Image (cartoon, rainbow, N blue to C red; front, side, top):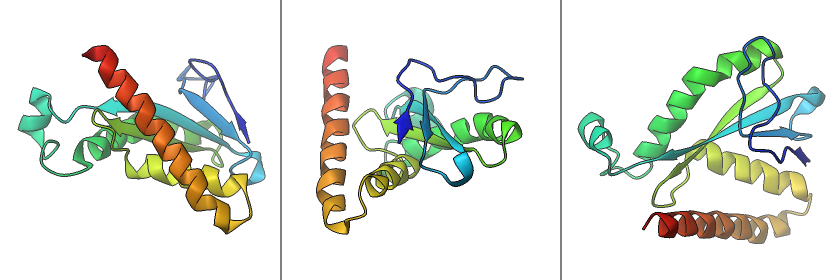
Length: 142
């Protein structure tokens, strides 16, 4: 896999100038590129409390944030190349990741090895690394 390493990846669509946080090459067939944009979702902000179930339903804030990213960016990615894909990587402030984010972790883990016995320990490592990064971010805010 080839993952971009900048703050922003090259534009997903040169006509729009829209940029994502990461690009992943080698994960999709036909040379397609997976564009990933990270979003942090708040479960405790006033708008989340008023507009939905973010503070009561597990994953609701991540799902809402991911849906906003998809509606904003997916069509721009597909317009540049119909084989390309867009994936939001939503993380709630407490550490829960969205379903799209977890599916991406699973896909990367499986792409890293054809041996299924390595998938669980590799995913565990990835999820712990994400949890540690999130905890450090929360600690910096406090």
